[in-house]
Amino acid sequence: QVQLVESGGGLVQAGGSLRLSCAASPSFFSMNVMGWYRQAPGKQRDLVATITNSESTNYGTSVKGRFTIFRDNAKNTVYLQMNSLKPEDTAVYYCNAKLIPGSAGYWGQGTQVTVSS
Image (cartoon, rainbow, N blue to C red; front, side):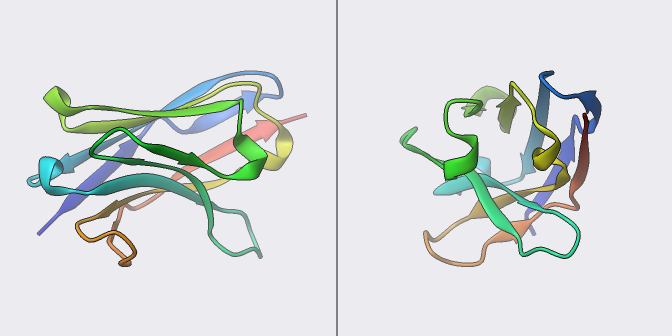
């Protein structure tokens, strides 16, 4: 059973930065795609960023140039560095891991990010 444990959420002012972490066990290296998604109240869950095991990345349009996804294989962890945060970035952020690209994959419990104006 894959477990994803997220951390790093919190309250930050607009323009500030946060770094989210997602530790995966036990099969980090077997995950073909890891990523972050977010869901604001009353809205659907949207893509934030993904990274493959060959380090190929993909970003949602609204976060390009502000967020960076990267992974540390030695720590079995994927990170999301969020800079220049905006109030519209406020959401619950979920880590996702896929053994098979295009599958639903596994989800973490979510971490709240709140950006005040």
